[in-house]
Image (cartoon, helix red, strand yellow):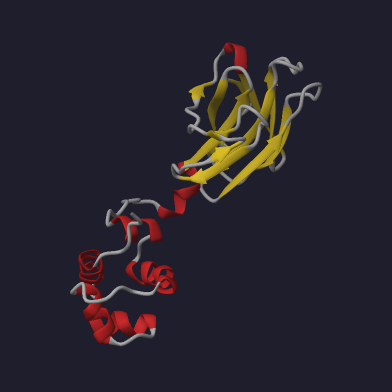
Length: 203
């Protein structure tokens, strides 16, 4: 059974925004009678209206359909909510703003849980002009290597794919404080926080 938006959800979100049925209707270029029908369960909005309806009500389409509003007090920091998925077969990397359901090579991928960088996965971050220069103390062998490095700041994701026999290093534009991730193909995801104010250091 496919879950669809309910009249109760539309009414609740409309009143929360302080809109009348006419005001919401005007935003969607429909009649206020149409909105009334939706809210009284005598009709459903066309699927083409779901995205503009969600936008008008200040929620995502997923929130609109589920009827559960996700609170994010810092919407400008959405990138920091990134979840990372890695396929163990082909090495494909997926990043998503929040958890989702992803499959690759016939496998349902679990979200990677990042651990703090340890001695075996030491990460050195240096500031070189307007860049972070990142190096690692880690082997880069066929069966044991760093697969990728990623820098996630409030407004963007930067990623560098690595392969065996390469040096475990990368340069990222310095766009502010954030979180640096390194993925070891044997031990998983590691992280360390970075900030433009911080000098070179091993983590």
